[in-house]
Amino acid sequence: MSSLDELRTMARTARGSGARVKHKAPDNRAAYLFLAPWLLGLIAFTAGPMVASLYLSFTDYNLLQSPIDNPPDWIGLGNYAEMFSDPDFWNSVRVTLTYVLISVPLQLVLALLLALALDKGLRGLSIYRSIFYLPSLLGGSVAIAILWRQVFGKEGLVNGFLAWFGIDGPGWIGHPDYALSTIIVLHIWTFGSPMVIFLAGLRQIPALYYEAAEVDGAGPVRRFYSITLPLLTPIIFFNLVLQIIFAFQNFTQAYVVSGGTGGPADSTMFYTLFLYRVGFLEYDMGLASAMAWFLVIVIAAFTLINFWLSKYWVFYDD
Amino acid sequence: MTTDIDRPVRTRTPRERVTSFAKHASLVLFSAIMIYPLVWLVISSFKPNADIFRDLSIFTTDLTVENYINGWNDLQHPFSVFLLNSTIISAASIIGNLLSCSLAAYAFARLRFRFRNLLFALMLMTIMLPFQVTLIPQFTIFKELGWLNTFLPLIVPKFLAVDAFFIFLMVQFIRALPREIFEAARIDGAGHLRTFIQVTLPLMIPALATTAIFTFIWTWSDFFGPLIYLRLPETFPVSVALKGFLDVQSSSDFGSMFAMSVVSLLPLFVVFLVGQRYLIKGFATTGLK
Image 1 (cartoon, one colour):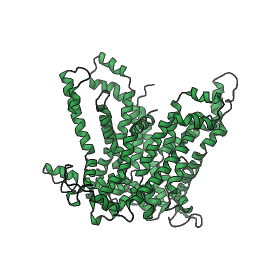
Image 2 (cartoon, chains in turn green, cyan):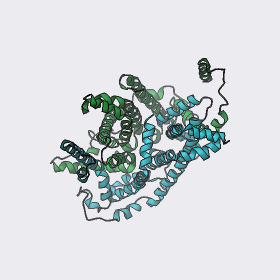
Image 3 (cartoon, one colour):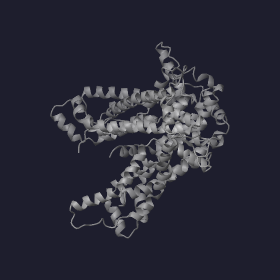
Image 4 (cartoon, one colour):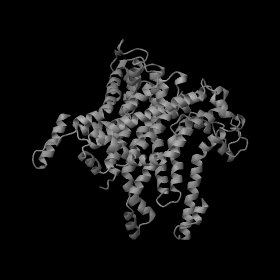
């Protein structure tokens, strides 16, 4: 780490800003005082626990045992072996991946379409924006998940509407083929926060570009593909990375919609819900730690692949 | 909405008028679909239990506040207990985040120090880290400290700036302030603490407001934290208390459940109305470089 700093100092000197000025009086002492709470939190609640959970993932650690009085037994890769050979584990992986891969793209497309529809100069923009944004603020709450159970229940709102058209809808929440899709719909319903980010991005595109394109005779479709879309790619990328990370961690909706069971027939047994059950209901904290690390690796992999792919489609103006 | 179309700001061609009308019509329709479940929830909470599923429309005259009275006392404790718990946890979290994140943000945005870039990168990484990876040791720490069934596991980390997202938001904000203001303060002989308290904090009120509002909304809605740390009903916040309606659903008192759902959403809705400006700005600034 310190060598990194030295390199930077060397680079700075090499760039030749005159004499070998060692940066003038750095604010080290003040800075570390200001940073003290955060640093303490980083060590006590992030870095320390990360190391500990990695260690615990190789042990047979039970929730009820105190790790201080009674250190857990080292079992090597035992938890990982158990995890990977458990069909329930793979089911939760499949459920979560399905959820992430369907709900994130759909949500972002909807967010982008509505951001475009709420383009500059539209009257009532702020009213529409508020209405579309409201669900993303409330969507994480238990009350909305409870509401969803009723909206998609056998006698619920959705089937009420379908009945108008003579369709006899299934009990969505209670049917293994449809329960997951109701949670996906709930996720899509909260498209407001990426939409707001898209709107801010659209506003940053200089009007000059559009004017020039119009003078050159480019129609709206052409303008969208040649100006809006390429200039918006950094923001699409940003939304994509963040939404994937968040979607992997969905818990509340899965818990409440299924009443904590992950049912029907494990069709909504999200990874995080499975992890919670293993750790806090079956008390197998070692296995749960291993699951947490697998989640980190999957999320990191998705993020890295995203960054790698971004070279091919994200366009930076500057 | 049609009245909007009747009063154009500038003269428009008939084609533009038609396009604009179609656009508004579809947006209004879409808004209605989006918002319908929420409106239905509110209306249902005022309907007699027997009517809730018999009648899916939101137009009804047969309204009652009975559900609110029943729901308030339906669980092990009056709902006011849960509201108070949520309020305490949220208020303490807001104070914690404001204090600890603004301190760190000032250092990152305005001070030069050893390992600054490294620490800043670490801070950014913690934003993306899934909380599950620290969950179990954190639980063990709090359990060993004897903090289970207290609010401390939910509050103490906020005073140590664990929600690094807000540090990032504040850093972005401070960096956008004109440098000269800080230099002027320095020239006037203000130390870092004074520059922070008397110059920086007043200027960053919009960022602090955004932080406070988001902290409120996220803490109020948080379900997972209270679920694992709080097992005694008298310590439940509204999120976990509401779950109680699902557990005792054999009674199928949907009216009470909806009524208390509305009560739990009301503070969020009020904060949304009051703080919209900050919420949207907050999202926009952190969303962009």
